Length: 320
Image (cartoon, rainbow, N blue to C red; front, side, top):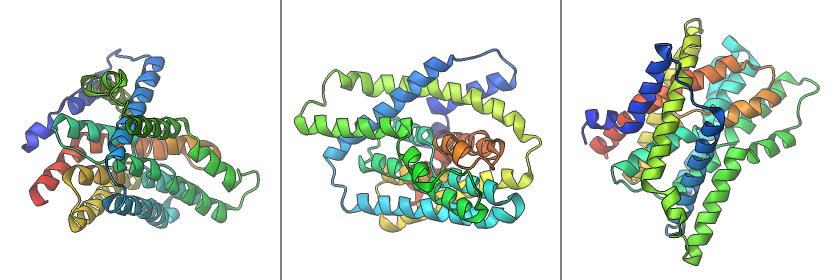
């Protein structure tokens, strides 16, 4: 598969369509209740399919190794982000950005998984476990770092932050559907009417629809970048590439399968714009959401969707 074919997959094209529509000031709008339904469907679908796949795959070996790498990156990224940004931005903003970039974007992962499905490349069920595992450690680490540095009163206790992080609705649907997929597969009943609802063409259609919506959201965020500090723009571009290249080199060194390698790279290269901002808003109110949310959604997300997935896949095919 050449680079042009990879770039011109339906998800990327519909994402660009939504982006262009907003930049040209179109009145295109997708109702929020519809978006909520589609997002929950995508979490349910990827979790269920991960559970089905996990039943036939041992999590030992590469699975445990990949989860270990994910945990290490979840600690490494907040630490270096905080170290690099603290003097320029202050404790709160540096910690919040570290949490955002140490976590991941579930939609970017789902887009990459959908891309692999569309070209007939398999990936193991433990990659969904890796997705779940990476959601919260960076957020917790960054908030603890900020709490130790700021030492302010009236702040949420760390235990409450952890509880909110692990009970986030997105995470609950993802984990719950993965467990259900595993159980139904063990019972031999996974090929029920759910297979039609969750798999194949319907999943691809829902993903394309959601990427169209995300294109409109990113288009609105891009307008905020004009007066954005250069250091934040640079970090939002360079940090994901660095994290992705680290994951790429690790995947090559350990000989991971191509599908697993792409998803590991995308997990490390993406940044959170749903779970982390939702928790940071209350747990670290001193941080400015306009900074970390615009960086994640307005710069890093489109960078990964339009360029990252196809370029990383090209590199994996060429050098693995």
